[in-house]
Length: 92
Ligand SMILES: [Zn+2]
Image (cartoon, rainbow, N blue to C red; front, side, top):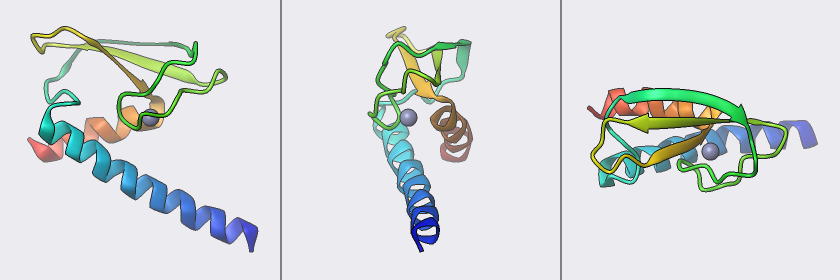
């Protein structure tokens, strides 16, 4: 029972996360440009730009610099980065 409900919740999370990332790409909060440089490092508690949740200390954070003029580095959960990657191709 518990397992079934948490699986369902994870699926819904994934879907709402995908929609939220789509929205952020559209309104410019997430880059549409390709990433010029990307690296991963152990998290120091950074906030993910895609889902606005902190990256837990035992996870990797992916940091990316885009070709966008503002040159801000973006920080993602590994999972959020993968969704962003696929959504920005879809949105393009
Ligand atoms: Zn995230």
